[in-house]
Amino acid sequence: MPKNNFPKLHNASWPGVVGKGPDSEPAIDIDTMIELTANAEVDGVKFDGFDLFAADPHLDIDSNDDNIKRMADKARAKNLEIGSLVAPIWGGVGGGSAMGSSEERQQFVTQVRKACEIGQKLRELGIRPYGVVRIDSSVDPKSWAADPTGNTKLIAQTFREACDVAADYGESLAAEGEICWGGMQGWKTMINTLEAVNRPNIGFQADMAHTLLYLLGYNKPDERILPKDFDWKDREALTKGLKEMTAALRPWTIDFHVAQNDGTVFGSGSHEKTGRHCLADDPNGKLDIAVDAGHWLRDEYGNLTKKIKHICWDGCMFPNDVMMKPKTWNDILGAMIQVREMHGWHEEE
Image (tube, rainbow, N blue to C red; front, side, top):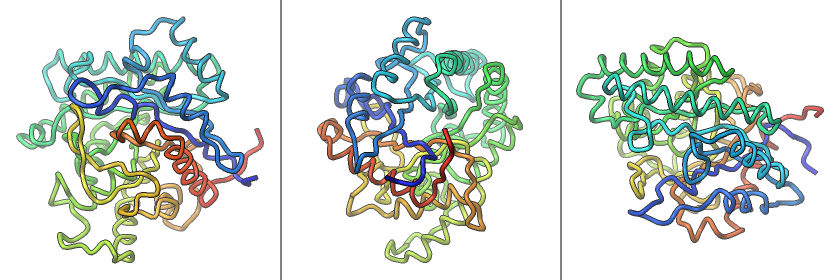
């Protein structure tokens, strides 16, 4: 059996929802996502849990105590824990732009409060021993670019208010570095936004598929690290670029998504184009998943930080037929196990 039991290995539930809908493929319900996660197994090792989308059709953000307990019971019945939550902070699902009108920004903070309340109740039910609440700016880069200074100030103010609310529930907020979000679309821009928030319970959620696009400066060309004509076969240059970026973002990182990317962007349904999530064994994948995860999980001297208690695989916008194949999740679990064996540790439980 593997020697390491930390970080815990989670699957994300939201690939069943994100990029789905009337203008794409049907959403995959939470029971099916839990079943797919629970059934995956590699050499006797299984997923330890899943991260949860706190919105319909998975878990209504306005869920009462009975609904939250039912979700906890579903996880427990499959011997799974729940980790990080995604707060539905976007317009159209009850939220609003973090740099929008006063009303929109208040709606944003309200959605964070509701997600934090759910998170606290799941902790009290003993099913959520770790994890954060994930947010973004809920605005596109072009709108942000109309006034970078003023809009960053507004986003920071909204995030600050959300952090203060989250602190009341013992929660931290992780801003995910997707290139499709204004004020977060470049690695330096992301750090500027986080620094402007100036709260102890704000951090960064690194996703290996999304942050690879930071290196290309896709929506922030002036922050590009790799040259325009970059040869992906130049592993030494790629590693150097990853080290530069992770050295800056790692101190902020409080949540981590393992993923693969082929160096392109992709969007489906209503989701804007962002770093494409690829299958773990995609032959076009540009990352060495296990090796490159170490840039996030180890410090600049190669020492384990042990800050991240669980890691999560994010396969957003995978086609439904791919998601329904057991092999997909076994391959993903196998990649996650490799990450833990290379960069994990053992704790008595």
